[in-house]
Image (tube, rainbow, N blue to C red):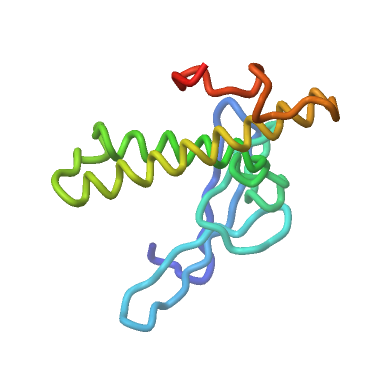
Length: 148
């Protein structure tokens, strides 16, 4: 960019034509860092999101991350899925060996128990039967367990 003071980008195509300013900030260790200026609220942002044909920042569009609207059970289930991938290995995680594997397996087992407890508590709350004991009822028993 030759003109650091007046940098902008014109966005055209299938969406409405829009011009977005770019702010150039000098870094302490040399070089520059470039930010978009949100056309709606004027704040610096690194990404612009297209919503209803308008490019703007996440904050301007009032967008949230999916994890921000999860409840406790969903968070626990996501943690179990992540630990399972770490234990078994996939394209993102290498399958651990030795002590690391043992530690991950134990973490996975604990997280799975937490998910089961949260799930049972949710079922118990939905049933709402005060006479029903979640430890005695077949509805709340773990289908994997062999005790009855």
